[in-house]
Image 1: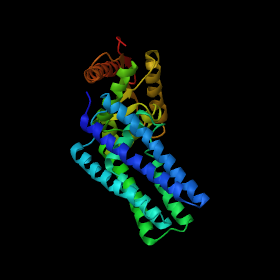
Image 2: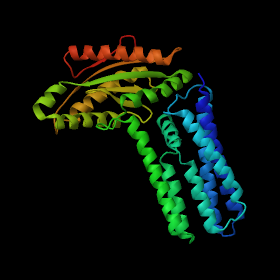
Image 3: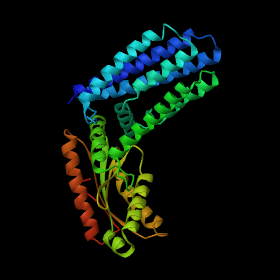
Image 4: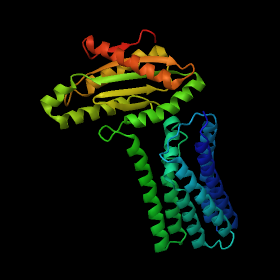
Amino acid sequence: MKDDITVGIIKLCLAIDRKASEIYHYLFQAGDDTELKAFWAKMATEEEAHLAYWKELLRMARRGFLPQVLADPVKVRDELENANRKVDALVQMSRQNPSLTNAFLLAYRLEFYVLHPAIAQLFHFIKVTNDAMSPEDTYDKHISSFIEAMNRFGASTPELELLGETIQKLWHENKQLVEQSSLDPLTGLYNRFGFYKFLTLLTHLALRNKFHVAIIMIDIDHFKKVNDTHGHQAGDRVLRSVGQLLQKNTRSSDLVGRFGGEEIIVFLSSLDPRHLGKLCEKLRSIVETETKQDIPVTISIGAVSRVFEKKPEEETEKMIGEADRCLYRAKDGGRNRVEISSST
């Protein structure tokens, strides 16, 4: 179902970046210095790439494939509407006095208005579904380019330097806030909230594309014994190590989350179901082998795969329940085993 507020927010982000591209194109055309013109052309090209990201998000939102990820979407919409009005004023200013210092001040102010936490959160969503498209990490370079160019072209002033540093700091803090709200601080995996938040998006994509998906439930065998024997700090180290091994040996397009206690859940966004057992066995073997040098542990695994038919949220919950039952069969069967659903 289409979320009109999310659609509106993405339209506003798209409008801001479109105006940013317009300003950088104007600064390119108004300049005389060949090297400086090349810099503004580069900035314009990067903004045009950002437009492609927003257009893809808008397409997904209009088709109901983008879940609501913002805590207060109405407030975000109002703030972005205000930012759009300020950017409109900047567009007018760009034509009045395009001096070098004013051009960099204009660019920094523009980037400051674009720098909303909602943008960091939406960029992160694109990274989860298509890492090759995501501007989340490249935005750092985008801001750094301004600071480097400002120094290179002699436009540096204490005020501009401070503004540049502030923008960099804000971007890093926005990214950290996005991660902290979705990640488990101990393991670095998605927490339960973050896992379900991204799961909603990925299941709708799978439904649209008729992908085979899978749920894998994983439990560290005799974890209480690890805590009792070696202490809770050692138990935390084991849990973190196992989580990192599982994440390292799955794809960036898959979700790995801490489901609770020592239980970890993996959502495979697409796979050949014939390979599910082989992957689960690989994960089981890697944990057993790689933990031998510290505190040896093993894992039990239950898994199930499906193609979604109509209601991915309901079908996913059924899959989680079925994978959990497989997990308990693996534990009852002696642990350090893989149990795949017979209906897979």
